[in-house]
Length: 344
Image (cartoon, rainbow, N blue to C red; front, side, top):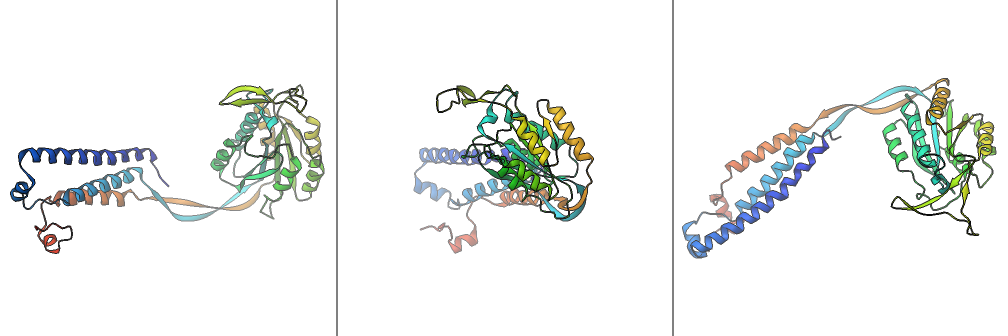
């Protein structure tokens, strides 16, 4: 865990120091050549080391890096604590088919769906959540977890280009959701399907009824309008055209409330109109609050300890080492001749 990541920008000092060192060495070399030739300079400064300046540069760079990491203040979890929590397991299945790009509901059906889910997450307590994306098929996005921050990150990344198979397979989403509930003792399991109701398979209602036998209540939230809207095809945020069918006619996609209502009824849940975000969020939140909470264990790092002192100490040590490291040749190194510093 890094406490102050913003200080990493200080690492830019290292290439600046290296560049200044190189320019300074070139300037010294040109100035010395104007003063005397190489042989005379070696006789005037017999103890001058060619390696030591480079070593001092390396020490300076390491010191800067160490002090920067100290400012960032890395932390390490020192204690893994098991916390008892009570909540409901909720899986959100979000429709990411192309029809969700329609803007008959502002700003778009998909953006509305993501906002509704995000607001529901904000109102949750110690529940667990999972996320599924589906179009022509369903794919897992986030397994059941208590990490709401991760859930919001995955939610924000949902888009209509993430699945190559188009269409709307709500039945596949329900089938996948059934595998998400990993706690056999959890008696309250909720599946929330957010969609415009287009279903190209037709078996969703039957699967929702089967899911109730496993304690899964299926709620559906409709996004879109019965009047419908066109599906914009954008490039860099600008509408270039609208989706057309095989006959060249502009496709009008409409909210199919009947399909969503049927799935909710078969799934022992309810249908919610998602036009007004606050109403949809309040409805789901209220239903969740009335459910019995099942106790489960959630492991987490409960304590973190600062580690900056190690890097601060290393940085100070390197700076002190640089102070005592002279640029002239060292007698015992001369004897070893490790850096070819002996006179020929």
